[in-house]
Image 1: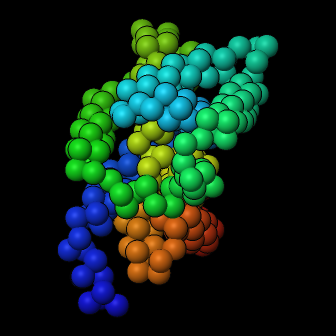
Image 2: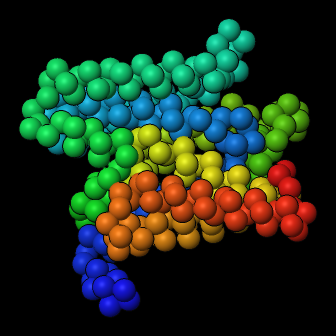
Length: 281
């Protein structure tokens, strides 16, 4: 098995998959704790379905660089979701459901009506579940993902205290002079970037797992926000790396394997938390 793994690791496409997978998992876990605590866990689903719909439009328009269309539209929708989440007439979960289902339906409809592919089912499956896209990354895509991921980590570290304040008590943060709307906007933009990047890793239907499971797993073990964030990042990176390796050796879908490892890690953390007395914050 180790000889086989060593052979696979010599291929550039495997190296690219590991680099991108680890970076995306790291970024997802950092914002995951904030989203879980702000009760916006499923915003990943909503934005991923928006990205799927926009990718369908980009494919119909034969755009060579889909990122130029997908990223800005996803960012706009992330901002709208954050704003409607505080609207008494349209609650956050309802807004996410509306945008999520609508974008997914229109995207699939467009792909069927204007399909130019001989394997539509395969294309849809790859987009929804990330079955092969992570293993077909180009060097340019890897560099783009690396730059954006580093930017996300730097922004999170620089504004950690403000994000912490906005996460737990917006009213108190506003009273202390923090521009809450600006930091909510920053969080929305970062989330949108992560979602677009993560579609290549686990597909649009499984993105929420990268956001939710590491955060919830860490909350079974620690009570402190900083400790939860660090633990979430470590768990997410380990699970992503392990999932990619297992999928390559076992020939299983990459996205589904990573999520399965995340679920197993959550089960272990849950039991460990019960034994040691750890609890969610």
